[in-house]
Image (cartoon, rainbow, N blue to C red; front, side):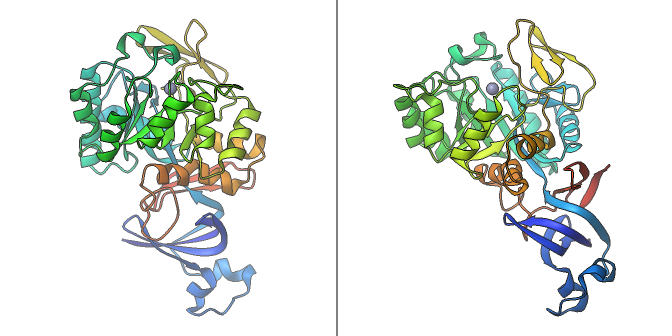
Length: 393
Ligand SMILES: [Zn+2]
């Protein structure tokens, strides 16, 4: 099915374009053309004031259009934690919860757990991929091969070194793009190489490793860092740590801009050093996003939402209740980042990191027609996925 959509303003290849017509066929962008050209069939410029009404299209969008958000770290949503119910039904609930906030592509994230849960999660993802789920692009295994010293809310009893059985799951070819977060002191460069050779994306995090050990993992093919600054060896004068290695490297860093995980100036510093192509906004969302409950069961404890913060009873920060649209707004409103750069960090960088940029994360010919519509105050007005409207404010 073919659909033509007139757009006031949109971001194409990280450049703003105005008065465009997006042509969508079967959910995919087949072209983006100047509205004047579309209306008249020539390069002749029509009177811009009347152009929008002159163009004969199926849909008209007033506002600013940017790519739908791509989130590589989603533990839950809509009241559901992926770890506790690793099923296709959970994936549908989580994806729907995040779509309301503009996330049109995501990598459900399983945190440190036992092997049976890892297998169930992989099977659920496999079902979603087989059904061509519109949002689910793969899976992120965050742990269990981490550092106990930097475990955060991950359960120490489940943290372990990698086994052949686990390697076999991570290298499955039926679960979309796989991301694995490992601590380099627990996973050797040789194993990183094996994973990378099998097309697994290796991110480093939950680690107390010194700089040299982190650098060895980067040399072996790791390309990302999981929630920069949080749960990793800090940058100090005589030991650059994982933070120093991350800032110096070309690897992509996930950043949780909820103003709880990071001081605003730390987030600003990271964006300044790494640039928009080196930072991807992530939510690290728990079940609370898009869910009404403030307290949610979590392994043998619980996670409670107080304001914008999630903690376990002992006060440990436990993921976030951040949504991607709020992350984008925080960047623009509180970190002084342009909407263009914030959009790249919310969509395109993650798609490049996960090698899905031809299909998602940018508005170009051949990519899915996944986008969000913002008003001038950056309110989320509409969410579109595969050329269909999912949410209208
Ligand atoms: Zn984490």
